[in-house]
Amino acid sequence: MIKKNWIYFLFGLSVIVYTVSVLINHNKKQTIEAKALYVGNGWGYEIFVGKKIYITQRIIPAISGKKVFTTQEQAMLVANLVISKLRQREGLPIITPKELDSLGIIK
Image 1: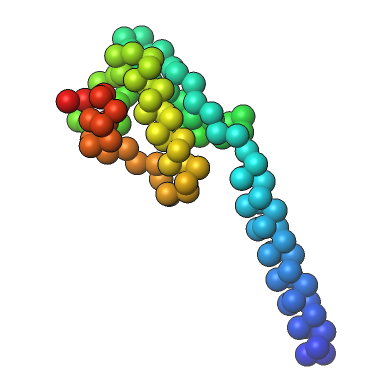
Image 2: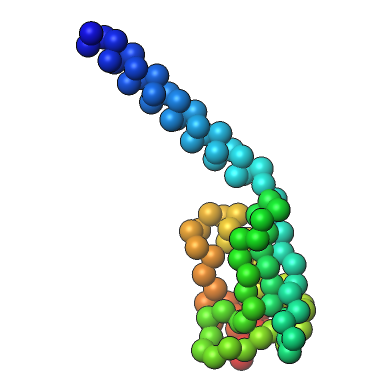
C-alpha cells in the first residue's frame, strides 16, 4: 500500500514538472511586440505578448502628472526599453526617471 502511494505521488510530481517546463518553453517562444498608441493629444504604447495585450501605457511612466509622449518615436523608445526588460526577465518592467532622461524623454 505504501509503495502504491509513492508511485502515485511520483507520477503526480512528474506531471507537474512536465507541465511547468512546457509552460516555460511556450512563453519563451512567444513574440513580444510594441505598437504606438495615439491618445488624442499625444502618444502612448501597447506591449503585446503573443497576440494578447500585456501592457497599455497611455501616459509617460515614472513621472508625476498625466503627461503623454509628444511623438510616436518617444513612445516607441520607451516601449522598446520595456520589451528589453521583459526579455531579460527582470520582473516587472519598471521605468525610472533616470532612464527617461537618458532616452531624452524628460530633462
